[in-house]
Picture 1 (cartoon, each protein chain N blue to C red):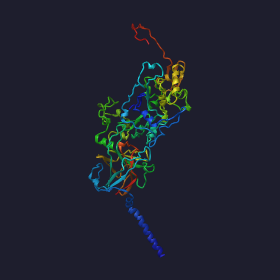
Picture 2 (picture 1 turned 90 degrees about the horizontal axis):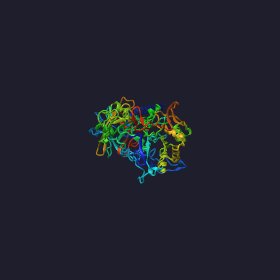
Picture 3 (picture 1 turned 180 degrees about the vertical axis):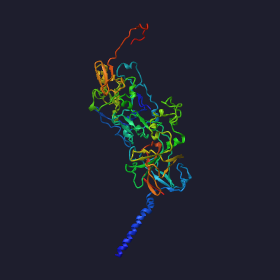
Picture 4 (picture 1 turned 180 degrees about the horizontal axis):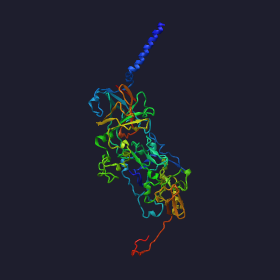
Length: 297
Length: 321
């Protein structure tokens, strides 16, 4: 009986240790399963500055890229083989710096045959696998999508037809005010805007005035991307000497129930995608990474 | 962008070389005894859902290219005195064909394009489109177009608000030459001989689809030109029944097809959609879907000759008809 009691005591202690470890050292388990990690800073982190010196404090990770051959239209050969990712977080915000090579700077999608550069981060709930087909009905994902033409619209003013055709002329638009060649949005009051249908019906791609170059969307599978009604992400991209440096940032927790809420001490599934405008990339024609896990200390 | 364009065949196109490009991509295909045995644009595809191409910006820049150009050099006078002419051209007015199997709808990865069940009109959802331009690549007729300002794609809407009111689309209503007829077409098995469209397309087979070999079942039908000597060119464009269609149309001019004549006289005669028609020995009559008579056109236009001298004004008339 005394032996049994000793064994029982040992078993209870062992069980206690295991149970305690599940609660107490939870962050350790999470951190071990993650292949990427954010670097925690106590002070402000750069939310829209890819050139900030603070990025030197962040650990850098090399993310591999392949083509997209899951759903047509395919892009069998990727435009890049890898991208450098740095992540910073403080108590309230998280910021990603994505750096990749792109010898051509494509910041305009005005002409019928031109496409713009872009990069996106897919973020999914912890402990749920998000498939590389942009989430599922049961596991929807957040997509934070930075676009080079939205960036240029903000930096240089909305790129109207005149940006592609400096001598463009039109005599009259129904109900437009001002003088030819008429600028969007200034010369288009409501009566004229009625005929610029994408803008009129609120399509986010057609709004001339941009507040942020990053669009937040949700997806439940390929082809289901839906822009969120409330936008919380910031960012900024700079192209220099054949390299894009793009910051995408967000508060860790938001009031938006469409956002994946993030917490310090947890890990999340992430993936990345890049579009090279010069290759005609848009939509599913993109270079993609595999799924990764990022730990937020 | 021209949702409706008119190009002169054979040397005109909008966008540039649209039909030549897709015919080349499709490659030579085979018709056997009036039945298509070749592949459609959906079947020759590899890494995409269709074969197609994205026209360059410049391809859209010359809508009037080749206008009024003849098929070859005019090398003799009075070539026009016999039909068909050995030197020819004809005008091909085109809108979106609102196909039964639209390539644009198949191509959109986001299902932003839909075909309305009530009238078959194919539309691009302007809220949902993200400007991927897969539809622009896919449509062999190149009637899905990219809007440079809104950065999403658009196409002919077949004036669906007018159709919902029982009215004709604007391009159809305004045709000066009165060569257009609008209505609802039934499947061949349910062809209604009192419906002018079914009558011309399914029963008399004088109106033919455009490039049927693409496989989309386009719903705009053309009566082929009778003056074009290159029948193979016409067969490539309208299918193997071209010769029959031409023969029927020639009979109309000889007075041997009064019902076809009546149906054609109803072209652009009213802005109300004609669901049924009737031809008497004097008139062609169009009825709307409620059975109300909406238009009556005389088979022979009455000719009135006025006297040379107008006594009321005390003047001689310069023209009297």
